Length: 390
Image (cartoon, rainbow, N blue to C red; front, side, top):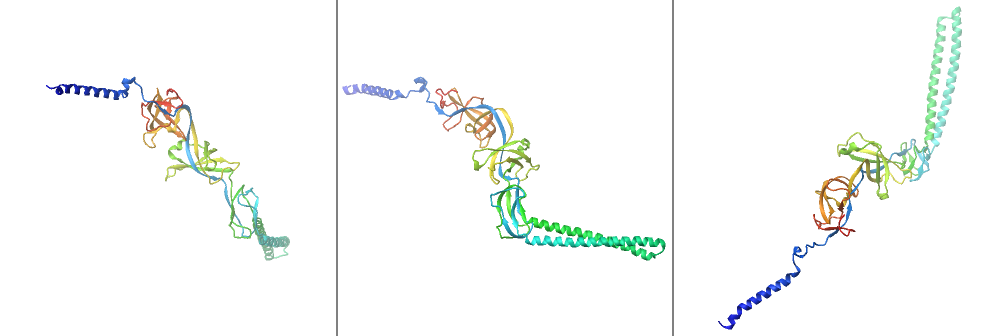
């Protein structure tokens, strides 16, 4: 064997040893965690809030348009030219306040004519009474003559007929007087109706005519609305009808006033369920003395039906529903520095809070911002907590 052949095995062994050393050097920074003291990855920082035990107000949501309990369209009862109008749109008027006047000239003439006719009828009645008095005296004389034989039966009968005729004339004249008196009252009412008055307090919503317009009986002059007495008309799902009672308190907001809340009381509940949407119409009365709310505004709120003490409450964002709209779901709880998934059930909801049961207890820290990276058992640290423990 020559020298070259003798050195080949030694060279191959040296290269193999050098390769193993190189591999060992390259892998020195990638030992398994178990061989490196068991160090875990850094904990994920999460926002968490404690589940609270508190009183829960059970409510039924409502929404609808506000409407005035008093909306009146004032119409003229007589025809004629609109002579004066004493109100502008938006103005406040009181009951019995004159808001417009129709030209009363023709109605004054009609009243005078009716009074004159009444005087004629009264004079005719007086004449009929005089004739009746004369007929009665003549009958008395005829009665005396009949007893002495100084008058025939036929003449006595004529005297009796004259009395009955005179009495009938008096009755006719009295009826004519009543008729004439009624005509006077009608004429006087028509004259009074020339002054159009407000039937109730309210604000002028709309003025339909201007001065100089020619009106016919029944023409609308203006519309009044009383915003001091409002109602919210809303529909209640029939499956929640058993929870609603008159007298229950209600609260609501309007887009006009933002988050400011207004209060009312359930006043009436319709006795019939609407067949098209299976709901029941209810009316909520709302005091509005300063008229901050207006008829026609949209309102959204809830009726308070009862209070439940000891409810377990969490923030709404902490809940993950099993399916869209489902009451079954889960939450992540920070426990021992790890995220633990717990199954829960939603009993009720209100704005940004949920009343839940099962799965967790009061005081448990629930994660309120659940991201896709959060898994059951992941190391977590609640924001503001150095240890990640509750």
